[in-house]
Image (cartoon, rainbow over all chains, first blue to last red; front, top):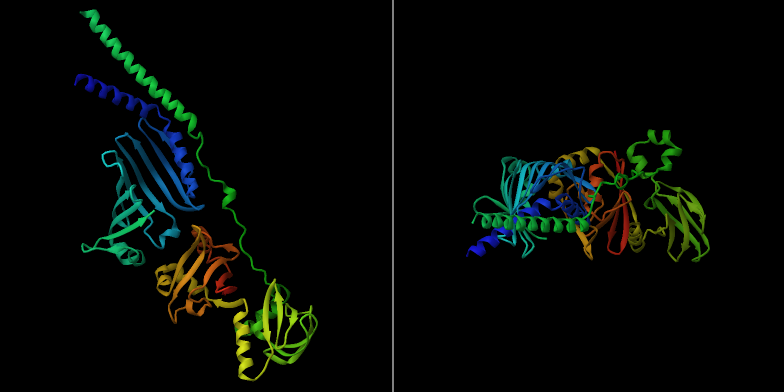
Length: 176
Length: 268
C-alpha cells in the first residue's frame, strides 16, 4: 500500500513537471494549423505562456477569410485531469449582428477525464445564457439557450431555427 | 541511523530529479515535432478587385441618357427582347434577315450572317427563327407572325434568352439590410453541396407578391455567381452582402433547369 502511495506521488510529480515543461505555445500553434485546415484562422493574438496554461489577448477569428469575431481575452489551462478554456468579451462581426447579438461576455468550456467523451460549458452574453455540450462519441453539439429579452424581441429569425421546449427554453442540436 | 535517513532523502531527491528530467526530455521531443510558428494572416488573400460592370452605352452617350426617363432608357436597352424578326432569307451559314426594334418597327435593318445588330451578331438562319450571339451566348429570335403558334414561339425565345435586366431600388436594399428577418420571410435559400463542397445556393421558396417574386428569380433556381464571384462559400455570400450598399449593379448567374441565365439588377 505504501508502495502504491509512493508510486502515485511520483507519477503526480512527473505529470506536474511534464505540464510545466511542455511547450504550450507550440501546442497552440499546432492547434492553429489544425484549425486552418478547417478554414478557421486565429490571427493577431498576443500569446502569454503561464505555468500550466496559455493566455491570448485580442485574437481575431476568421472563418473562410472572413472576420467573424474579436476575442479580448482567452485563457487555456491544462491540468490533465481538468482542462479549461475561458473566452471573455467576444465581439462578433457586424455581419453576424443582423442574426445574433454581437456581444458575448464569456464562454467557459471544460473537459475532465472523469467524463472523457464529453466537453461541456456555458456562456453568457447579450443573447442570454447557454449551456453547451459536445459529445465526442456521437460528434453531436447540443446548446440549450435561455434567450434574453433582446433576442426574444429582435432576433425572432434566430429562435425559429431552434427547438422550443416546455420550459420556454430553446435548444439547438447539430451533428458535426 | 542518521546516515540511513540522509541516504533515503537523497534517494527521493534523485528519483524526483530523474522524473523531472524525463518530463523535460519528453517536452523537448514534443517541441521538436510541434510547429515553431503560428498561422499569420496574409493580407494579400483578403484583397479583391471590386466588381465593375462596364456600360459603354453610358460612356458614349452620357448626356443623352440623362435626359431620358427611366422607362425610356429601359425600353431602349440593348436587349434581344426589344427586337423583332420581320423576314429572313438564307440557310444556316449564309443569308440575310430584316430586323427592327419593337419600339420602332418601321425602321428596319438588313443584317447578313456574320454582321452585328445592336451588339448581337447574326450567326445562323433557320426556317422560322435565327440565332444571334453575344458574349459567347446564343439568343434565339423567332420570325414575327400574328398567328398564335408563332406568337407562342416568340415567347419561348424570350424565355430562352439568358440575360434578364431588372431594376432594384436602393431603398429596398437598405430596408432588407436593416431587417434581415424580412428576407427569410419572403425567400428561402439553401446551400447546395456536391461532394461536400458548396456549388451554389438554391431558391427553395419565394413568397407570392413579395419584392423577391418580382426580381426574376424562381423557385428551384440555383444561384452560382454574383458579380463575378463564385458563390461556393458563405464568405463569398457575405462579401456581396457587406458591399451591397456600395454597388450600382448586381449580376447574378443562375442555373435554371439545364440553362444558365444572367440576371442583372441596376440599383438606383
